[in-house]
Length: 299
Image (cartoon, rainbow, N blue to C red; front, side, top):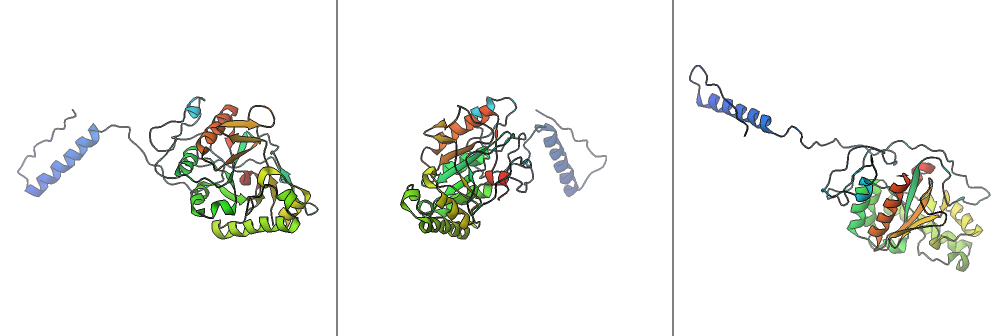
């Protein structure tokens, strides 16, 4: 027990003065007895370019660590389910070594993988069918920015669900109005244009930003679709070569994530298992999750 000795004054004191000295003495004693290492609160950080920092303090939250992160020396230990809302750590500036091809001859370019020497990977999440608070907590815990390719018919029942993701640094992109996976074969140019433009207008009205990227339902595209996308103001059609699905990673090439990979996920009931599979693959490959739009310069 820490003790504090108060020296008796040489002459009698008034009651108020004595009480003031006693209070000051007790405060000093408490400070002396306190644990010199206590919690600190960092000042709020202004949102920066959406590139995850490679080092820094762990996000405050419950004492539940991420085993995937702790398995790699020097990596951040992040809580799985913070209970204090989305937290954004300061992000390093984007280092771009890829230039988005322009629309040429009325055709939007198609991106399947980003050719880069930077140790980065891009997370994209589709549809918007399932909506769970756990999804928000997990994305906040990992501090992952994602390109969310949403379909109006899947999100219109609760569009506000997706706003916390946007507040953390993710962006809403275009995945059509109705998600017709046969639109390449069943729809002509005008119908495809209506599907894409309709989602452009909906995203602008509901989420406050007009999408720059488009993902075809099912991934199939055609010349007509590239024309329709360009006419709707889309900068690029985005597909993928790796995906997190049913709690595992599937690759079109190789068996690991590579720099510049665009990873497909979905807002599905198995979201947590899919995100865990992606997390393990991302850490094993030594890659940082970067917002695709930041890297392309189309935020």
